[in-house]
Length: 615
Ligand code: HEC
Image (cartoon, rainbow, N blue to C red; front, top):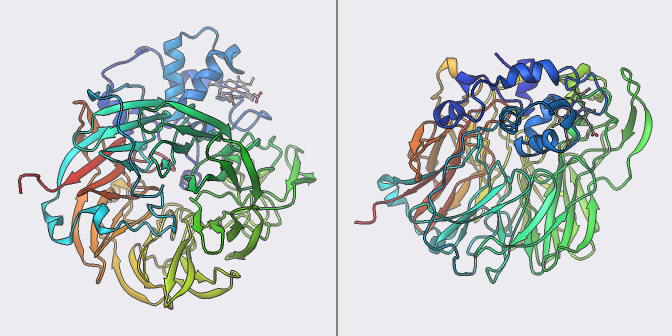
């Protein structure tokens, strides 16, 4: 029984709607040690008093598909003291908490974390750079940082598992900080976890879900991240004290999915949005969000410049045919990847997503080069023109669906800057299944290769990796929607940055049971990570694998789609591996597992592997 009466196709479009039926939410069923409102029926309450306004029939009421993006915390405050308090005035605080957790797709069970004795950790120079692990976007971790070689992979053992309290997805990539890991979570808590035993040194509570990785400055005195509601934070990584916070953009649907990149004294923050979901409401005036990059003074959070991916301000162009709501144009081109830095040319690179309204802007599905000082767009390369899409194309009657109706093929993976015989190249991957190389001086195409059929969840979805001139491309080619037809080739590819030639391809092993589909899928959508000689990549089906970089042979394979005892003694649930990628640090392999979003397999686990220490 689902609270949201959506078609499989709509769910498949990464629309963020969870299957919240009790039997299919492993976390709430596994961990319901504490039931704040045992006799309270959240689904019936929603159906009786909320659904008639939040099903797309009332203008301005966010469509229920957005509740998971809004998150339990914000829903709870809307019901307690916000705009929705009228409709919940006779509910107890506990009932409101239960309802909010249910609608927000979060588990209500609060798992205690194991505290460390030390609440303060020493400031150290970071050895990896933000989400992309290097400023060039390579996701390559050098030998002295990884401290893990090919020949010990067979000895890897699960060392400890952290259960993110209350979470149904785990997607903030851990950032190494000395002997600790800094990581965000679904309920907005940022944790400093001890690398050796997973105890918690300190926590910081952000206002909403933190999906980004933390970017730490050179002196180890500041860590930066963003939340799903568009707030950027600077905290002290030693103790979690807040230093500054700032709103990234005035648009109410702004969300920060891509991690900020720190370079010298500036913080570059990519702007994405949840407006594609707002558009499902026929009464919503679609659409006014433009993707972009904001540069902040890293010291104090002062905004230095904002560059929108679409230069023109959206203007009313007519009315939608159902509710008569004004339509705006141009809009979209969200940026949900971490900016890549090119110090030589004083520019950064980002990829943009689809347009939200018709006709599609000519900077949608593009790679942009932006001047680091002025914010000026130096060049753009549009990989796919005419791609306009939003959630109204699947639900809500379609009033706001642009006539192009997709195919929704964003460039979601951060571009990579590599050098080929002394010549720099920008390598990008797209949800269409294309990998391509551009000239960083002018954005001209050097080569382009299609490695997969593509789809809403990739093709190439979250991240490529590179070692030297070898590019590793995880391909998802998920069946999910049924919309993308033709042969699929999920798995890991290695391509030459010189000419795009495929050096090897390792198909994703098929491990899902037919009954587990479509949530279980062999596709590789999460970002890959390379260390010398080895590349790591995780799959929707929960398998984390290590591949031989020279020939693609699978050297190690671990199924994270299972339950584990966590460091606090509670059960941690693994599920799909999606979005962020593995981190290899001081002989440890770190991976998040669980991703209840777009109907993938829920979970709340951070798994840490290492060879036994007594060797
Ligand atoms: C009579 C129609 C109506 C009913 C009933 C209703 N809502 Fe709303 N809801 C709205 C409208 C309209 C808005 C937008 C309000 C605004 O933006 O000022 C909204 C906004 C919200 C928001 C977003 C709040 C924010 O701060 O952005 C949430 C969450 C929400 N409603 C949840 C609920 C829940 C849960 C219930 C049932 C207990 C409920 N609503 C009942 C019409 C309704």
